[in-house]
Image 1: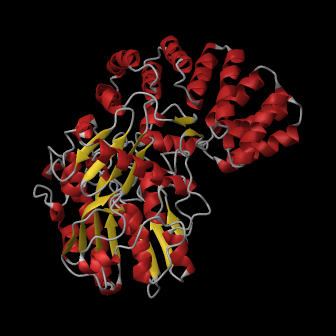
Image 2 (image 1 turned 135 degrees about the horizontal axis):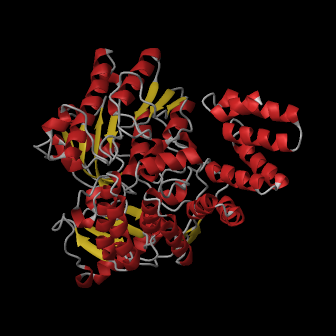
Length: 590
């Protein structure tokens, strides 16, 4: 799978300005689907649909962070491993960390984001690895798995924002950094395909190449993906090559990401499982005909969960696309591929039929109500933030088609883009100016408050940061991180009683935010509330028994209680689990 890859950026899909010779050769020796559609324009939900053949309502991965694959749902890995295949996955980004459940069934699942020695570094980013690293890890595994039936999943994240292709692709595409990332990714894919050929495996191996979603690149006022359901982010490349697949086949009718698992299972002679809502594309591969349902359900909860706007749902066919939101849109895809003319008023009967299909696919109104994402721990939260998925933290998501329609907030998207660019270059005063205006225009947007508070904290203007976080709470645009940040501001002021008040609220919302929990325990200790300190520390250690800072603080607590032996045990554990924590050595020396 290739993250964030538009179909129209590949040579085999008509792009001439970007060199993708390896993927083009794969398409030439197999079948290319001209209209493959992803169910969700977000990495984790879309991959869950690819790996299960199910819509998001069934597999439960509805958004980024806090949503985990339903344990009862079979995956491609569980099905093939039960059939005697050895299975491995090498992912290029922390957004597919095993914590979200996508590793189930893989005997090997490598989600380590540390760059190996000698690899080209990604400046300032620890939540992804380059495509060359993914390929190298996969090749090492292939070498050890010689002679075995195998399922190998490689995930390339490079085309995802920020666009920072390595040389020589950076110099080759100075005005199209996204295109440079695509060309670089092609080289990584090519190395893997070459290795299959060199090992004599190419003729006997089924290769499926697909993107999880595309990228808007400014179309419809969106710069990246996740907010809208236009084809710029839901139409993806899909190529299938291998034994029995005719060379050079182009399948024109629409297909869906949920059709991939049933297709692979059909080709392998396996049952796809009862969860599969897609259909096998083997008849299309062999004869090029349309198969199964021509209806493709779409959704994105991202506008609701991150921006406080209405979620969007949709239904696409070869001829039509309906987007269901506060202000519905209907497009004739055969005449308006760019989706620029909303013809809803002219075709009310068509819109009504597609809307009925939307709710039929979604489960009649059953998905309206409140979703409660699981808490995200510190490491996962930091990884998501490093990749640009910043929000106020854990908060219930109300999905009831209320709130502003995202297309009415295009100016806010543009402002967030400009503010983010300023912040990325440490121009926090400029970012704050943009976001103050945006907060007045969009006062229930959690992301605006999160970014604005961050600007003021970087400027050391903590009074203003406090005002921002309180406004977020007043406007119900808060999450656990909002309260945790307020707690830290009060700690700086020495107002520990108020700090505890807000950090306890954060802990109730998200007990896995261990940074907040350790700050809470520290505040209780300074207030002399030793039993409360112990309660919080034990909560931390139940979740992570190797959390060195918690052991160090537990040692200090035991010293205050006069229990030197217990204190020594905790200090020794802190040193063992985090040798770089100097304070633990000093405390142990005492």
